[in-house]
Amino acid sequence: MKVLLLNGSPRDGNTKFAVETIAESIAENISGAETDIINVAYKKISACMGCDVCKQEPKGFCIFDDDMNGINEKVSAAGMIVFASPVYWWGISAQLKTVIDRLYALTGATECEGLKAGLFTVGEDDLNSPQYEIISRQFKCICDYLKWDLVFDKSVSAAGREDVKNNEAVVKELKELWKKI
Image (cartoon, rainbow, N blue to C red; front, side, top):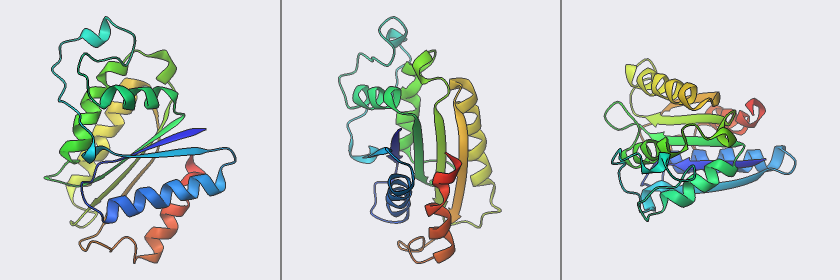
């Protein structure tokens, strides 16, 4: 199984650590699994213009000559995709949101139906804050629309850059997410 992990954080901190931990755990525990981490903050990805050219071309192709066409190819080849993001203003990072908007090119692509998806978010607010529920609901809608199966949705409250890494209980949970695949 190919697992694509999209890191939506432009920083080297909690989200990056979580993505790497999830990827390592998948590779260690699922025989034959291939993991690919993409830090979308460092990719050249234009905003979707809603031109619908992607609906007239082969699925996943966009007229913008940027890194998203390659990401869409990887999404189409994957059996699972993990989205990971810090929480910015009650939502995911702009970098990851741009990727999600451009996934529009894959709507209706039968090869992507049934794809497993996972979501990891980390924010400073307490887990009772509505920001996590807002993001969770959005991803449930995205997965329903794309006919994907959201197999995990994990949120963590962390303020310091290494809070996730230093929280043994959270690290244990991250290492066990592979069981939900």
